[in-house]
Length: 165
Image (tube, rainbow, N blue to C red; front, side, top):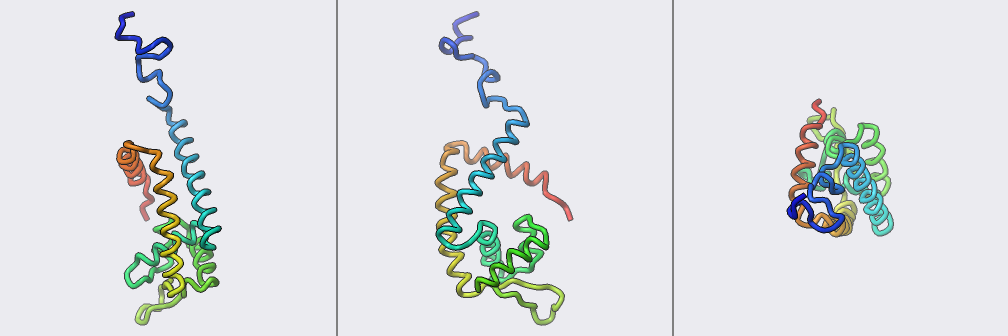
């Protein structure tokens, strides 16, 4: 073995022997699930504690706030959040009960039910967005210089697995 084969005593010279250098699919999957679960739990807890909102409720409010006229159909919210129609109906129902959203039908198109942000909803989503975005950004700083690579890789997987309706 030549001197170029040993980086230091006990340290393998081939990157495949280093933990994480060539992870198995099962390990990658486990890490994705763990990170998602842990970040989701931390952010959900902070939003409940500071704003009286679940993470799902916050995400629904944000999607409605970002929609044209601060109004979105139940289907649009469901698609944006990856929820079933029943799941989004339940989430929006809780937001209506809190006075953050109203359900309405648009004149001329009585078929589609829309969720529209109220003044209270606009204020709540603005305040909660600050908490959400700061906490997520702080947690994701741990990606360091790998953030762009990880984001790109996850975007490719997401695009490839998107459900076509």
